[in-house]
Image 1 (tube, rainbow, N blue to C red):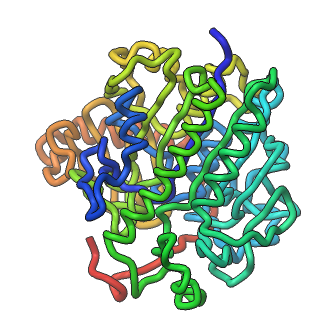
Image 2: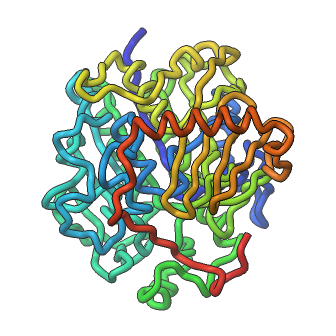
Length: 438
């Protein structure tokens, strides 16, 4: 098998049902995500795919390393805060093997276009962790027009140099990605492009909302604004940009040999649609961690297939290495499991226990087959997920032995992970004083 070109696309805070192909409603202007819907129709859609965390930077640690993010100090932050700029500990250590560094060592060209959120120079940066090129913000959230972070500091970079470039950030990211495809096409070496959008993360700005930048500069959480109409338009702008990238692949005659994977870093935020799931960002209920997963690779993946395989972010890191013929560093064994056979044989499925923990509200979860063990605020629950995706019917009192066994399995796994550091921070963008709880 020819080594594929790989494009790994990550949306930011996208809900499980925000896309049409996952049951999302049309917007006032029409379909929200026609390009992504077509990629799903022409490839493979996963219905039981998860993020490694219900918040952004921990998931990105897992994606970059192919390992549980709890193994690294920065992965304990929920999430890494803009105020950590200058920290020598809160970031992805350059000496740790990463997905781009392993692919680069195997002959791939590598680029990150979009959000990094894994630490700041001089100690951390994409260029120190395997990427040859980088364009985008370093922090967790920036204004789409001023490109300033929560502290008001400018945060748009080309490599390790700050860059002043006017424009709507989603479109800047998309156009850079198109340019990269054209520059890399026709070269002997395959390429790996991480395309990490900030959309549809707050602040709630479409291409037509530049005037809002002055209004939200002191609080990018944008707690007084936004609505479902703006939110859906932001997704649509991202979808259009992905269409531009797909057009570039087709124009260069390389679309069939390109593995495109799309997902979100965690569940949706305040304007998202997670139906039928409950909860969202920061929650280990399904709405916080179950996310869209689409894989499109015409040379290998049959059209219009659906997989029920349970998987999480770091499994895709292992999958991409497997597809590329690259190997993990034996000193840093992967926690992720390759899904390459599932891509070739969508009906194939295997047991894949998935574990989570959160400092926030003392949360923990284990998904194993049909069952899920969950703890929130000291309360233990047991759910039969296929029968009760909304996690409303606690089966624990009826099946205490199953609950005890799954609790013990989680405890056994947790004993293999470093403890949560006492100085790890939890950063909540809003509380009940800002809006009613879910």
